[in-house]
Length: 597
Image (cartoon, rainbow, N blue to C red; front, side):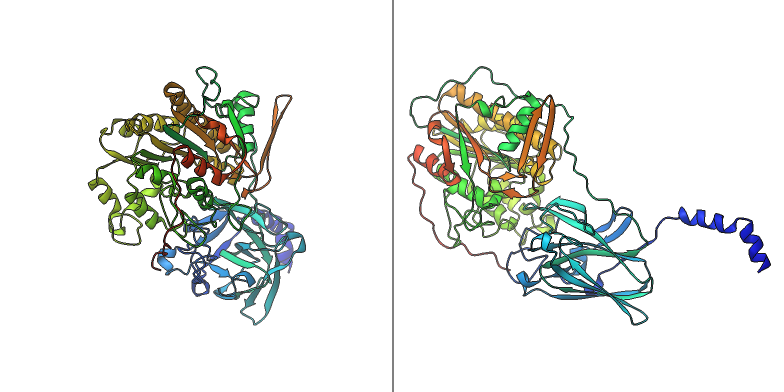
């Protein structure tokens, strides 16, 4: 005792405490192992086989496997390809009653002061009600158990919303090609005993757990919004004011420019930031302007697949459907009609060519996530120009050639054999032989700057205009949607300027030739974006990370432009285009079967 007193008086306890204070927290990721219930990826919606929440492409396949560190906490993300499709825990709750409702994750007697979950919920009641998403049980080696009621709006949050709560810190977010989704980190104080199992039971909503970790106490830092702009951009300007709408004549050519998710708020923000006033974007100077409603069949809020189908075919359909009506009967797009009548057709997008918006002009599938089948339709459409980003290339090749197709077809090889020149950059497109059709998978970095779509538009116009019967071209910018989903004003502004540059190319071509109709619109609004410029200060706000039912703008120039003013529905665009060309949109055809499961 005297020795202990001497050591204490010598300051040993102070030194020991100082060392402890600087020691890094210790953590042990818990492998979900046999407790995992399903995969992050889901190939087919509502097939009752699961794969995340059984919503098809609205899954978590964007989650990269490996160690994910959140505020220094390591979470182990499993790989679907290595686990046989058992990588995460998803409990269906009442909305997915056919999915697993309980899970048991064995733990090898690991100790920790806290259990950390990386998780989310779906189909949640209003957060203010704090209903139980589920119950969490932690079983200890000594036979005791800790029980936690996990409540939505306190301990977990809706994965499709950006809202964080006291014990649900928003720490990860990504766009899954359908929705901006998020995961939340929560911590639960334990007894400090060795843990032998973690059990979960669903209650009032679906509960999705991507990973769990045991460890010391630490503060979890959440994602912070950055609603400021400080970059310098290049904006287009018209060579001269546009003339009034010409006399009522039928256009020879039609160019449709789409800003994905580009609502009126995106147009306003870009004008305010770039020009310090509204009305100065090229698209805003087109002589005809109006509003366009975007609701899909059965939902006030559309997705890009249903919106693209409406824009391309003039028919409302369910979210997720591409080129099919609600009963999965085949629809015909104005692009397909143009092709049948001998006109040239070009589809250009900064998304994958298999993405929802471009696919609506040539594909016919019951789910936007059927990428292999969409690529097959691309090969069969015969369009002169099909250009998207490099992400879509894998769906054109079988797995033994580095692709991702569900079958063994080498669609890329078939298209090359049919005469398509395959390009990956602007120079290759501009130099492609004039007699060949073009399939583009634009390399990373080629679609980043403001003028990238304008350059593609110019090259496509030079190619398509060789057809004496005329052409139809659709040009889409996708990063406008990413700006809304991610509440990222930089993407919103840069994307809207990409649209405006493409519009500039289209309008100057139309001005020169006098026979071309240019239409500019969006498939839907994303983010509920608002902005105001007061005393030189720009205030920006996004109310959501999701699509909304807000009308979008439509601008028009050229022969027939007068028919797109006022307030219209998105289905009116295809109907009016067909009417201008004296074409008849046929009734729905045969039922299109889903691909084999």
